[in-house]
Length: 354
Ligand code: ADP
Image 1: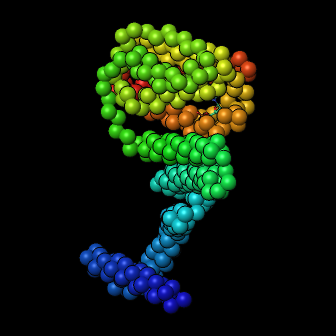
Image 2: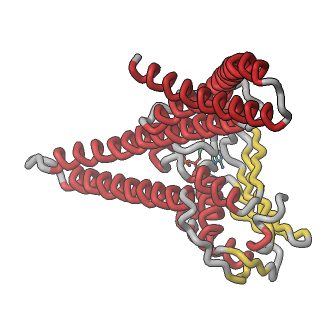
Image 3: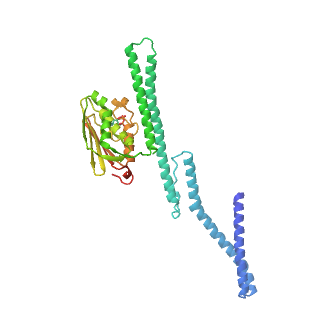
């Protein structure tokens, strides 16, 4: 109340000064044009009060206008920003509330709402990611603890001892793999990887990737077919791309039964390279196909222990960074074909989409 009175007093003082100045001007003007003194005396107070009333009215109207069109939106924007700062990403500015169109408050409000939605999405991803990681870490740890406890029993046979220690080694390898993949994904997602781009032979890289899984495809008696164009030199980041080929080929070998076939093809069409990894494995049902590039998603649970659902998420992220494309065609029980399209030159990746 005291504040309002003080505010009004200040305003009144301001109007009085304006009215006083204008009245003085009128008096001066009256004496210059030699108006009768009588007239000046009658008109002076009327002029003073008229000017006082008019300025009061217009300033009050303008204050009200500013309150509605400037102060109210600013207050609303501040309210929402404060909520966002406190981590409440569900806060939104009610846009119809902001009626001032000319000074772009509406645009600002819409941008803040978009930002809040984005932050909310990132937060959900982050919490989901932590929940998934903790779950994925806990499971192998529990398995290792279990086998460790069994190993401590004095009356176990040599065979059992071997079996338990092998289980521990396998599980710890899986755990190490998982952590490596999480770190890689995290690095790629944060764009911390500065690509180390160089010219190299893509065909050679693909052959190396195939050979990396030699013991697995030999064990499963899987036939490997290759149709790789010779001498395709690309200018790209070999480490990032090897993640793509290794994951696709290891999946193809993993999801193909004994005696099946895995084919790897590569051809260049001008500056676009097309790589195909096909298998005659179990195939992917349509409802699974729409999720396979999501983090921690595992469609085929019978192979769950051999992976962690991060491989294709990594692949997709790398292909996205390169503005490339990845697609999958699959028939249940018949096999799957993954097709990757990238540009020959890394530096073109940002300028053009395929
Ligand atoms: P992981 O292989 O560790 O389970 P990925 O991210 O590499 O995780 O793959 C996700 C899912 O996609 C797999 O669990 C599987 O269901 C499906 N998938 C991927 N590649 C193939 C393939 N070649 N054949 C059949 N299913 C596949």
